[in-house]
Length: 288
Image (cartoon, rainbow, N blue to C red; front, side):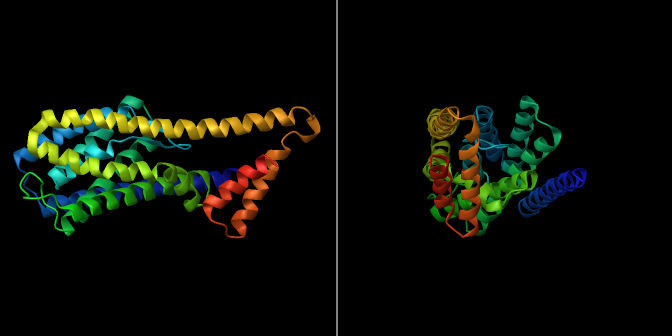
């Protein structure tokens, strides 16, 4: 009986990965069809920003289960603003191929990561162009609206695709996974938006040397992510340690607080409380 659901879940994840790969291929093909010829200056920009993205990607941080994060999206999106064509999408694809090889991840996870990053950046470039965005190398002013939509499109596709595959793998509600993976870093992602525009502008003005200087600030942003995530993890571990210490006094109540917390969470979800309130109820029940 247990083998059936596991097999079905495995097949559903594989189908999801294949669908993501097909969508990524279609988006990349559409970019090539729209703008088949790429200026040499775009290739140089993509190469420079891909090197920066590779460094930040390899030094990524762990998010929730099965997922990790990095600030590599900043140079990726800056590259898209400078070279809004297929060269940026190919650069993102190659960076992710190298990252998956370095980290030696399972093939299915590696393929998904490569495809979802490629899909995210290709879709974001299409949106950027649809809102009138052109290369900042030749534009008289930064296209702020197009840059904002570039960021929104990339974030939406990236977070949706990742949360979808995790939800299928863990058999959990999509919205719960999305909040777990994204809510804690949402403010830092918004802070990164000016850095995307700044990095693109600096490269257009000062070239590769200026871009590598900005890369130092990206490392600082990465540390903000890490500190925030480490604090959240430390708080959760402290709560669990306190509960374990209390329950250790009486073996008959071992696991009681965790069971109450799980039941309280389920009830809070059933009555339709907001996700932030559900989280507070879960913690309160753990400490009741």
